[in-house]
Structure formats: structure tokens, C-alpha cells
Length: 444
Ligand code: UGA
Image (cartoon, rainbow, N blue to C red; front, side, top):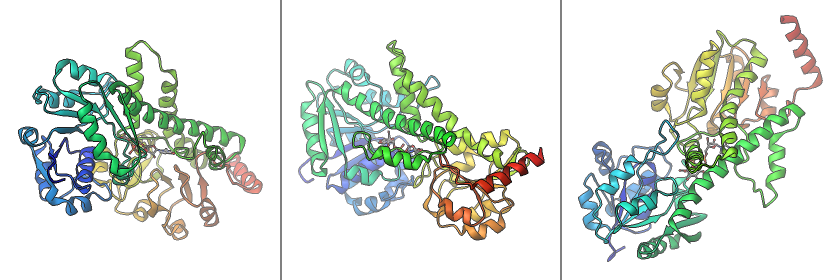
């Protein structure tokens, strides 16, 4: 806003770009910096290097308030608040790699004029370590809770904004609170270590909810219950809540797997064994593999069979394939000797790099042509719109394994498909089951 100093954003990956464009949309001047010159060039031309709904419009609409640069000097000259949005990928040990954060800190003058506002997800204790090395630097932890695919919406309508600052950084915390207040949402003012922990604990809890409902789904399959009914009945209890109770082929993405593991390691480094998270991780790993058993139940050996994976990104509305369930599934299917086809509406480029042995198709129809089974991995809305009745004739075998309980099971069954979801009562009539079992017995 006029008269104020611009907001600095360091690192224009997914979090940084959403942060920069949303601040600009709120009327602030923003100077955003990244060491990747090609990315800065494309952003300066208003080309968006990521797939995130709404970003292009924000960039276009606020072009005159956004400056992109590769020069840290330029940011330090104009901005006082420096939102650090560099990535913190996992290391082989499962700890977070903080080298990019450290590279940023090493370039900051310890002059008391600037505040480093940490948006990157870092282990609890990072703020304390940074302040030990740069005591004059004001440090604020302001974790982000954005979801890929709805990040702009999440940013502009936050449930809460967490601002963690210790003595000496209150001036920065006050300014950050003033920036966020117009968005509504509860402002949580706390200390740095607690703010860092809120972020990790929130992601770990959501991941725990998912692994919990996935285990319930697995038990539902054994006892003939329907997990979607169970989740509905559980979620109406306000103490439990309805969200993140969708059973499926496990969670993926750049956040949950990394943050759950980082919290587990963080606890381990202090000598505490976080047993619950060990189970959350293991359940998630096994969940991705259960699809193989469902396919084998109908097809017998998968050797020589053609399996089409519908959706390769870790969730819809993103081209992000980091830790996507499709990666594990494709590897397992190859291991069983199957030919694997894949289709995703937007993740074709990362898929061609990460899944070199998967035959990528230009459409769902092409992937399903002659296939022995369709496995829905990512619930892109267009998969519900497919003409499944017509596809039934074009597939080699009429089997759908719905890894997200997303498709209309009754419609598919009416069209002649065998349909398998996750944690659903089988839906097979007694006659159909008897017929299948006697066919299976005959083929042995
Ligand atoms: C997650 C958190 O939801 C955000 O609050 C957080 O800011 C972000 O991580 C982060 O730390 O940066 P995101 O990874 O974008 O966001 O994706 P989610 O929508 O949370 O989904 C994560 C995974 O869980 C996906 O693979 C999704 O398919 C799966 N999921 C989600 C389920 O299997 N079941 C559910 O009920 C919900």
C-alpha cells in the first residue's frame, strides 16, 4: 500500500508465488526474489511456471505491484519484512534439508532493520538456531497451511494465521498481523518454537486421520461395512469433524510424507520415539499396494495384463507428482509383469520424467483401449464424466478399481463392470458372488 515498504518474498516456488501474488492482490507492493534466473524471466513475462488455479489471473491483475528479481540486494534495499519461502526437501535420513534456508540467512545483514519471516516448513528449533547465528536479525515463524489446488482460496480465506515471535521481533509480528488481519481468520500470536510445532503437528494430525480411516476401510472390507458411511457417521461428531476422512490409496504430495517423517525424526533426535507416526507412515505405504490384491482377485496373475492408471498427480488440480501413489503403483505393477498405461490431465511432463516405463496416453479413452483394468488413482472430475458404458465395449476386460471411491459404483455395475472401491461393502449379489467363486474354482 502506498507509503509502506514493499513486502519481500524470497523463493518463488509454489508457496512463494502464491504468497507474493496474494499479497499484491491485497494491495501491497511486493518484491519477489529467486536464484533461478529462468523462472524469474518467465514470471517477469507473466508466465506462470506451476499449475495452480487462480495464479495466472492474480499475476495479470497485479502486474504493476509485483517485481521479480534474482538480486537479494534489491530485496534488502526496499523490503523490511522478508517472507522466506524456499523449499526444505527431505534428506535421506528423513530430516529436513535446511541448506536453502541457511543460504538465505547467510545473505542477510544482521543490522536490526530486517525481519526474516519463515514460511518454509522447518523443524522446531530452527528459529532458535538462526537467531543464535544472527542475533540482530528479527525472526518470525509464520507457517503456511495452503493446499495445492486451492492455495489462492486458502490464502485469502485462512482458518487461522499463526505468528510466532520472541522478544525483539514484536515490531515485525505486529506488522505481519496488520497485513493478515483484513483476511479474517483467527490470529494466533505465540512464540517461535510453538509456531514451528503447530505446522508440523497439524500436518501430522491430518496424515494420521487419513491413515486411520484407511485402516478402518481395510477392516470394513473384512466385515462387509462401507467406509464412506462410517466416515459420514463419525464426521458428524463435531469433536471428530468430516474432513480428511476420505479413504483411498494413501496420501502423497510434497508435504505430508516429508513433514510426518521430519516430525518423527525431530522427536527421535531428542530421544523420544513417536510410535504413532511410525504406524501412520507404514499404513500409508501399505495402502498404496493393496490395489494389487484387488486386481489379482479378478484377474489372477497380472503378468502380461495391461493396467491403465487414471490420474498420476498426487491429487487433482495439480501437476505435482511428488510422493504420488501412482509412482508406487506403477512400480508394483511392473514388478508383477503387467504393462502399465497412464493418463493425467495435466501431469504429463513430470510423468514422462518420473514414470519412464509407463506408456503415457493423451486421453483416458486411449489409456483404456483394450486394457484389462482401469485403476482410478487421482480423482480428477473428468473421470466421472467419461462415457463408461461405451468404454465397457472398448476395454479388454470390464474391471474398475476405484482408488478414491470417486466413481458412481452403481452406474459402473449397471454398465457391466466389476467395481472395487476402498473399504466399500462389495455390493456383489449372492448370486454374482457364487458365480464368480465357481468360475474361480473352475479355473484352478
Ligand atoms: C497439505 C495440508 O493439507 C496443507 O494444510 C499444508 O499447508 C500443506 O500440506 C503443506 O504443508 O504445504 P497438500 O499437500 O497440498 O496440503 O494436500 P492435501 O489436500 O492436504 O492432500 C494430501 C494428500 O492426502 C493427497 O494425496 C490426498 O489425496 C490425500 N487425502 C486427503 C486423502 O487420502 N484423504 C483425505 O481425506 C484427504
